[in-house]
Length: 584
Image (cartoon, rainbow, N blue to C red; front, side, top):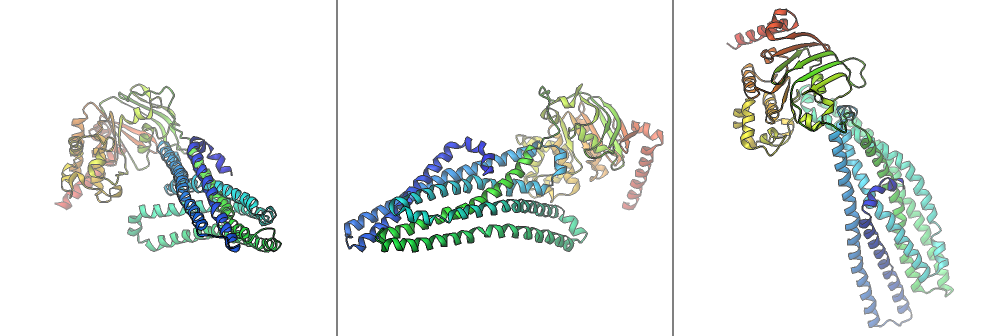
């Protein structure tokens, strides 16, 4: 019953709704006592040959009224209890989704997407069952069982009642023992479902890679192994679950044997009438549901308890990115000062950044270059406050970025990541994702600035074209330029391009950079790139290697240094010349 205590906050909040539902359950239970009593009375009347047509019509009318009453009262409890369960699911689903929105990057490193999806679907359904079927089963079994036993004592015989219900404690003991084992088995089942969900999500997301390398058979075999293991775990759950009904049936059989043997004896001894025995058998039949419900109840509660613990463990996790109580709510703007002496990712002893210092006056452009893994994207993650635990300080407009609210900071930054994620909606809505109130003219202007407007006009539906999941229907260059348009439409104080021009040709790259220079004359820009032509016009360029700044200066300064930058520039110039000759 611990799950009811854990959900006590919700039941207290919805006590009127559930109180009304329980009241309707009581009324249903009371109405259910009428048919067996009427049937017994009719049997006695027929046995004594005293049944008249008027009396028969009266009893039939009473049965009809009982049927109508059951219909109305059942509608009442279903509306109240199932409505409460649906509201709980909505509350928890909203709370969990919002929690996902607030969590930091470390949280998503610890939890795989498929596992989080399992929590948000399977686990929440199990918790909803506690507030719906669980509440119904608990109170309906108590109310129906209690009123039926009282009717058996009052309308038939207390001795027969006592003997008939003697097997019930056996059911309680069985349900408790099986319930504890079921709890452990269901926890393993839920974990197996999460692993299966993970595998499915990973395979579907990477289907292009799987097909490219011809790994369909191998991946399918791996998937089948996980399915087989999941089935084996669920077989244990189903085996324990299946033990409830047969055990309950055996106990009910014992109850019927006692009823027929001892009840028949009382009829022969003229201590009860044949009609009372018929009523008693009907009442025993009414006890079938409460007895079955006990087993079902423990099943629902154990499943819900395991799921609630899993979901609650997620909700208890705290983001390492915490806003200060007196955080600055004014949008950030001004000069940027980046002074990080050392930064390591959580759980990694290796320093990703060491003594990376630079100042970027408002309105200027900074270029960041270096080999893959040199630390370029890490700088951006710190600027975006994905991580706060570093030795040093990052200032934006003279204030430590950790002193801003997240909204104030991030609303001032436009970020175009390496992974250009697009949503399954129209081209226009992907561009104005930051604010769907943006007018069509603003959308098109942002598309022109990112040199993708003409491409969009060639699409079947223009700006109304659906791009498909993750932009599957677009080329790499089109996805990059749409991501740039999505960032520049907000006119951010700071625009960050994280290797965002790698999939476009040199001509398109020059067009985009020229457009951005015109529209962002007094705005700050940071460009990280593998292709040095993307940063050659920057006010300052820093070269990273293994998290250290090894060179800095303007394009001409770095060429004069004859270091890594000059070497890479010469190499890329040669490659471009060779490509031009081949095309010619």
